[in-house]
Length: 262
Image 1 (tube, rainbow, N blue to C red):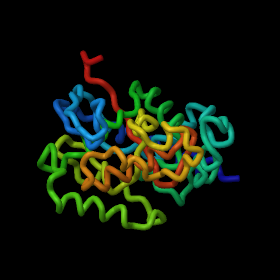
Image 2 (cartoon, rainbow, N blue to C red):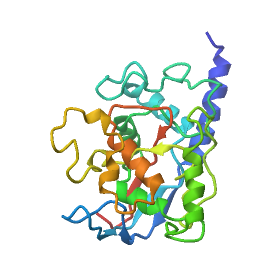
Image 3 (cartoon, rainbow, N blue to C red):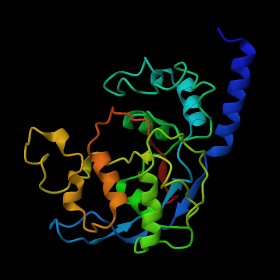
């Protein structure tokens, strides 16, 4: 058993990180062209109107989620029902309450299910971002609201996907984009609220194909901009998941409407 002072020191360290990490930035919204078709015809894209919203400037960290599970025992590993979190939920933590010294407090939390991520955001008076909100924010670089036509920028993003998934996670707070949001690329995959609605036209899932799990990449079927490989891969991953699933490279951040917005 660890000495009491060890728990006190660890708790103080995590509390410090939690207090300093939860910042939101405002995004103005506006007309946006998604890589996914939004109209009734699956081969024709149409602009959508993104309402102004606030987004966490960085993914939720290990420290923040540790504080959450301490405050909400129902979300501890071993207590959260299997229908809400699979067997790998927080599997890398030393104990259900303690991530342990091997896990840095300021890296994105992973091995978290959609249900758990949504519960965390609700506790913060927020929600998970929609896919369109996430895609809108992730289209910006440090100086441009939409950098997607820049081949060099796209290649820089793709370089992260070539790295082994076993590489250690980096601390949150990388270079921010023009809105002040960081780590949308190059950190972790991220849950979105409507992850299970990304198949929007005739694919195997809508046609009753029993080989559902073979179609991890089927999101590509309806992608308008086939050069957006990084976005395509996120769509493929998210659309292959169930809400209770967890992975060691999947985290989340929260969003909320701006004051006066529905």
